[in-house]
Each structure stands twice: as C-alpha cells, then as structure tokens.
Amino acid sequence: MTRSWWTPARGAALAQGDLLPDCLVPVFLAEPDLLSVETAAQILKRAQLIVVTQSCDLENRGVEFVALCPIHTLYEFEAWNPEFTKKGQWENVRKGRIEGLHLLASAEQPDDNRAALVVDFGQIVSVPFAYLAKHADSLGQRWRLDSPFLEHFSQAFARFFMRVGLPAAIAPFK
Image (tube, rainbow, N blue to C red):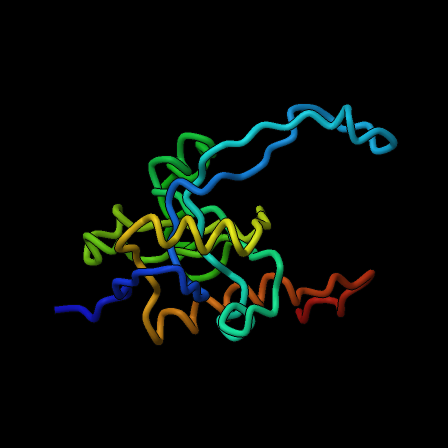
C-alpha cells in the first residue's frame, strides 16, 4: 500500500496544501480601463484551487488575502492544452521538467497516475481570507496535502518563483 498524499481536514482553519473546490474567483471580462474603476467589468467563476500561502501566515492571520493556484484533472488540462496528450509530456511534468506545473496524486486513486491532479503555478489567484475560511468551513470534509508531499509541493512552488533570468549564460561545454 502506498502512503497517503492527503489527509482529511474540516472547519475554517486554513493551511497550505488545502484543496478547495468551487471557490469563487473574479474574472475580468475585458481589458479594464485603469483610469475608471466603473468600466472594469468582472464576473465570478467557480474554480478548484489549492492554497499556496504559507500555513504559518494563515494560522497567525497575517494575511488579508490568500494565494491559491488552480488545480485540474489531467483530462481537463489536456482539453485546454492538447500538446499534453502527447506521449511523455506528463512524465516530464512528473520529473519537474515543465516549468510552472506540478503533479499531485489523486486523493481517491493515488496509484492511478491518470487520476493525478496538475497544479498550474503560473496562474495565481488571491482571495480574501474571510471568504476562504467561510467557504472551507461550508465544505465539510476537504483534502489537505500531508507531509512530506506538502513540503515537496511547497518547494516546487518556491522553485518556480525564485527563478532568475540572465541576459547571457555560460557557453555549453563541448
């Protein structure tokens, strides 16, 4: 039997690695006129998200907004990104070779790699802490990444954001 990636969580207490389905996220309908707030039309959509804000900041209520990233099934992601249907693409993501994407095992089927979930670190959303705590509480049971998978996830997120682009690199050795 494989070790569980996820542990059940309940209540309003939030932690990094919390999987939160059906979160309301604002989406701009068009390019907003930055000089006029009234013209910045937006709608709300529902999204499955995973918390990336550090647990210590959430526990101490040191943040007004919580950072989250979208999390999708492989099938959903492939529908929007057909290049991921090609052989070997998900293996490259699994090995950390595709920047900004991270795979997590499914809570229900951890041994089925096609049931895995993909986190897109390139699309961060920020949601008010108070809304998210109330939403989490209303879910009843939800899933939370367990150690050491949480630390691996956190490290992958940090690696994505600590990248430094150089204007020139050392030439390849031949």
